[in-house]
Image (cartoon, helix red, strand yellow):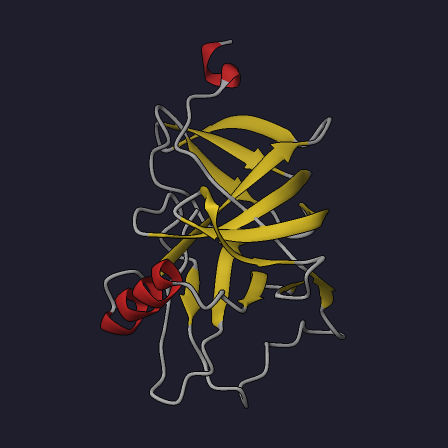
Length: 184
């Protein structure tokens, strides 16, 4: 899953953006592509965000108050406050240069939460019920339409159309994986 990172000169050091975008096809995940429907996402109680799916590089965590996420009509929006560590400073430097500008996530499909179809010769797994466990800032995403950025303190997360966003902390990792479904 992917996201764009954007850095502004007066950044507050937060990493923000959309690691999940609805109704967007992923890259080839090993013989199939994937799409996430609006309203498909449930966020885990203790979500965390990391760098390149590495659990040793936590950028923020819901229970610590260093990660927030909201779900709106576009997708899942995250706001992580990275730690004052050398690897996090290095990551922010790479974001500012534009070298790393995308995101990803990990999830579990809930019962009845997927459908496999064929579209234009591709197998497509459409997800309608997933539990998102982790968000990740990555250099090699599966979803290239997502976005992440570093913004100034005055920047506010986008509001969902029709009301306030549902706010949670969200950790998401996505591994390019071959699924049992494709083998069935």
